[in-house]
Length: 616
View 1 (cartoon, rainbow, N blue to C red):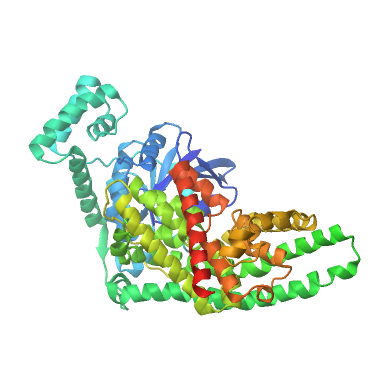
View 2: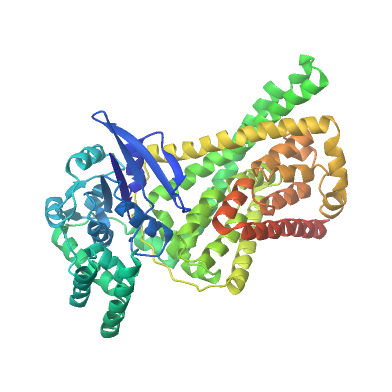
């Protein structure tokens, strides 16, 4: 059997999908699209049940690629049904999507999630009454605690059925639907979609276009607006019949505190600054311990083994690569992902989006862009993918430039592992301040030269919730394991390649060629160019490579504080890593990717040269 899983963003759909499918999830683009779909399977009563997790949607009648894909999947005829997840705390808003899905006639099961949060908010939901109104099975769940999620698949297998609820559209709309059915044999769904301009039958679409013009002329509203109004009216009526308001639990209104400019903006700034300070201080402490243990017990004893010179070079390179990965990169990345997961799971990120809306508009985007920008502090790749949710190509182009400038966790490794550790925390924070100014200036410039219209923000606020320790740890450990699988082999292999190239004198020739730029203009050691280039593979490789070439992880012994600072600044601003460039090319086109590459190369060299000129 095969079911689609769909719902609005922030309804707990992804958590339910993970609980239903467990391990073995496949991620792939749907043929002919750039939309990623997650597919997983479970086994119930010796029968395999496949789950297709659709992207979070507010509707299926728009022109976005995700909405068109949802229409195709729901009407393709190869599903046994759909599982629609609703948010118990915002039922009226979620019912709009349900009414649209119900019109497709697909067998349906409704999961009302976040029942625990509804209870906390003082809401009561009459789920049997909702089931009677919709004509389908309705199951209440709390996915965070696993309440009733185990019943979803058995209920879907046994009792999924088409909904009986029907939207009573405006009399002129209903008349047009009947006309298309009588004259052209168009089913009700095909007629509705044709009137809305999203139909696939050109004959029906042409006739519907003429009818739509007449309706719009008499109503002074588009057919799309009339359809939406009718659905919202019915959604409001249904919610009014099944949702009750009990006495809310007393307590501090956190939403009021976090969503207003004062004290919301100072709280946001304090949270971000606090995150960086924790990463810097705790990460530096852990780095000192791990690097010291590696040096004392694994690297220093190697010369006493009596290995041939080339073999000794390779063994030392392997150990230094592991030292860079486990000692320098891992502590900072682990801490950052833990803190980021706490913010995500608390529901705070959407409030940050509203607080940032005014500032984002100056950069040509709306406040929703703060979400991918903050995600970029973890990794630029998922941030670029999240920027798909921005409504226009103009916003996505501006976001692509700005996201690649945000110091990701790998760049944080460089800032913390070099500047905070060997120059000082104030110097490390100054790099973030510098990058923030550059991002602001770049956003303002791009907002004036990038073609397209600026749009407003429509964003559903996720409910505030207390993060669950096990979920935060699971999410963080998954991200850290991704780092270890991808970055550590690159660090070790890159370290060995560098060791061999250095052994045969190839690196020295390459560094001498670029010495006029890196030594004369930037004031850096000649081997810094090699470290920067290896940083294109993965940013944290820059510091690992630098340690290999310098022959020690104690960079203060071989570089001045100014050299360490300039190298860190250039590593942060220089070409994004190869993974980011690949996603940039796929999402925004190779021209934008090339333009960003040239921009960041010139920016990194220019800022580095200015710092060297100012302080020498």
